[in-house]
Image 1 (tube, rainbow, N blue to C red):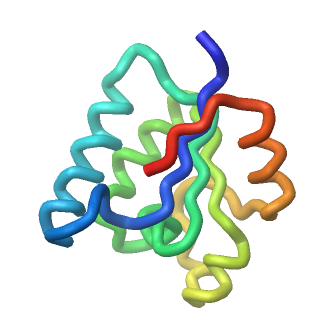
Image 2 (image 1 turned 90 degrees about the vertical axis):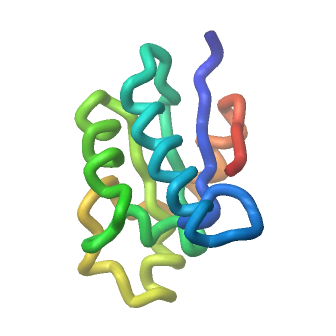
Length: 111
């Protein structure tokens, strides 16, 4: 199976009802952690970086994925924009160049 990168662009999954989107994202990340197949990398940008920070409803699921060897990358520009650099609790900050390199060398799934 080819190396997969999942790009998470928002703290909710889908468009429409935000509460439902939060529930869907939490379920997606939980079930991804329970899945036998895992992506190689999760890249978070825009408001998606909030999922990796203190107080996130999905933080436990993301820490589990990180513990299972999934690389978790958070856009540094986004963390700085939202003033959350010191609140990052899962994953590590990354540059746009590293994100581009990961995406160009992999199959990408955008959420």
